[in-house]
Every structure is written in structure tokens, then in C-alpha cells.
Length: 483
Image (cartoon, rainbow, N blue to C red; front, side, top):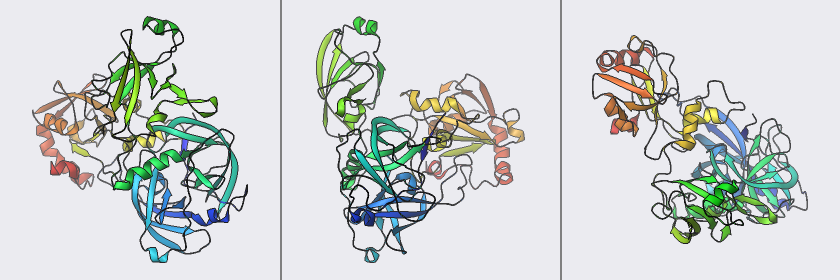
């Protein structure tokens, strides 16, 4: 299966399609030294890695690039194309959700004269575009040209969240990440990923999402794009639509579930049919009309909203057509599995050699980003990204087991989700640890209904020995120590 690849290399060029030379002066090469935390051996840090990527100048002497290009960065430098000198920089804001980051310079006195690039939000299929960046295979600026071949909602590899992307046939390769996609003399997108094994398919983050990010952080706080917080069912079956009381020419989607955290909670109900959103008809596949007579997922509308804005829905409920205006409220919790977070420390607990963590995209990304899905991929855990019940706060799982006489028979366990401890449903990590230590024998029930037994008396005798044998700095993460 083809998988999306994050691009750590960029492109640059001279004047194609009449581009101004100022664009080339505004594109920079970024040098990053990174060190992330290990989520498989959570008491350790991973090895230091180095990468290059692209960025470009925006207003207020700032550089914009991809989050994945500077995530977990320990040392950061920027080089302008017409200079041999590297200038120290640091990350000012980062959005893991839509893979964007803002850099600022440590000492602005070192800067050359800057020409910030401006953004253009108009997108039309077949528009001619130019990609600037520093891709692998050379050290000079590279420039390639192509067209906008598709605009659609798709999964962002870095965050595993779905937003709008621009697809282009212009060459985008590792190192192009963070580079500007230019139409005329304006930026219409930021290069960020491609597909391994394909040719002439590259993707960019459209400028309306970039502008949403820039406007969002003006107050110094990152909030993100609102979500509806509902699960829906497409209504492609004409029989199903007829049963629901829809007219022959009506289209829409069926609400299966409304999350507790949703702005729609207590306003929209299960089995409502959403017919329109902000006066746009919703197709049976959940799409709305886009430019050039094309269609796009209805989430596109939310990419132009902020918390506190209103959204209007027309719904069919029990044969009656209703109009509901909903205020989009900030959501403190938007799912059971933690989203990807740059610089995040693993939350873990070790006893009897069992390594327990709360499930996060940071842990799963190793599998999600693979070119081919590994045979040992934790499919049961990956499914929880989409279907985890809202009644839970967190998913607790066994990462692996450090072999010891206190865990004989369980030493091959890996990526096992835990649903109950001594018959009590696990709601979150802190509650799990309390349940785990409540009685001498902790009977853990996994997601498949199988049982695992831990003897807490034996654990007391063995935990320090396990800590020393495996050179573990701490048997629990700092966040759990403070609690």
C-alpha cells in the first residue's frame, strides 16, 4: 500500500513564469538537530538526528515552515539562499495538527533586508504554480513548475488529522517541506508531503489553513480549527433516504453519535439528517459544492471558522425540517487518543516488568508513517483512533514486557489494550494505576477478553531489581510522580 511521506527536502529556482527575484530571496534553508523521546522504552531519549528543510519569510521578521521539519528540535539554524552564513533561530509557535510552525531569529541584528511573501487563497484546478525549496540532491535553491491538479480533504501524515490539501504535479521531494507554492507572485500553499513510489504527486497545505493558523496565534494562544464532534453515516442508499422521510431530490448525512464535548451536544441528536451546513447542501457522501463544479468534504467550512463563530445547520428530525444555529465552543477534549504533540514526554508506569502507557498518536506514528504496514502493526490500537468510545478519557495499553520471573507466561505480550482491572472498566491512566495496586492480584482484561494476572506482592520484591537489571532511570514518568 502506498503511504504518504513527510518531505524533509525542498526546491528552488530562478525566474519561471515571470516570478520576481524577491521570492528567491525570501526562501530559506533550515538546518535542524533533533532528539525525540522513545515511546517504546519511555525512560530513554532517541538518538540525535539531523535534517534540512525549507521555509520562507512572512511578516514581522518570521519564518514559516512545517512542524515536522522542526519538531523536537534542539538546535536550529536558517540560511538565506544568497548567503553562506547560517543564522540561529528558534520555534515560536507550532501547530502539530496542521503541520505548521513559526520560527523567530535569536538575534535580529544579523538579518539581511527581508521581503515577506504574501498569501492568496483563490484555488482553481489547472492553475499554474511554482514550487521553491531545497530538496535532496543539491545545496542550491531548486524551482519546479506544475499545475493544481486536485483540491480535496485528506489525512495529514504528521498529525493523522484530516484537512484540505492541494495536489500538484510539480516535483516535491524530501527537503521541500515548508517551501512556498507560488501562483503569480503570491503563496497559495506550503509544501509538506508526497506519496512514496509515485511520480508527479505532491501535496501542499492551502493558504486558508495557513492564515487560520496565523490569525489564531495573534493572541499568543493556539486553539486550532473547530470540529463538529459527531460521527456520521453516508446516505447513498435511496431506500434508506426514503425510510428517513427525505424527498427524492434531497441529500444529506445521518448523525450516528454526538460526542459529549461537541458544540452540537443537546442541539443535534442521534438519527438527525444534516441537509445543509451554512446554506450549502450536503451530499449523500458528506461533501459540499466547491469551486470549478467540484466537491469537497463539509469539514472545509470549519477551516474558515474560529471558536466563538456560529454555524447554521438544516436538519431532518422525525420527518420535520429544523434550522439550528450553533455557537462553536472551545473543546477541552476532542477524543480518547491524544493527538500528536511535539516535544511530548511519554506518560508511563512500569511494574513486574510490564510497561504501561496511555495511547497516543506519538506512539502510533511509527506504524502510521511506514511505507508498508508492518506485520507487527498494532491494528487493534490503530482502530481506536477512529472508533474509541467517548465514555473513556484515555486508553491504557501494555507496550511490552521486560522478561522477569514475576511475569512468566506474559513475556511476549506487546501492544495490548486494557479494558478492565478486576472487573472495573478502565477510564484513564491514573485510575488504572489505582485499580492495579488495590488488591494483591490484579486481573487485567484486554480488548479481546483475555486475562493477565499480576501479583503485587511479587512486584514489590522485584520492581527495584528490574529497574537495576534493565538500567531504567525511573519506573514512572514525572507527570505521574507529581500526581
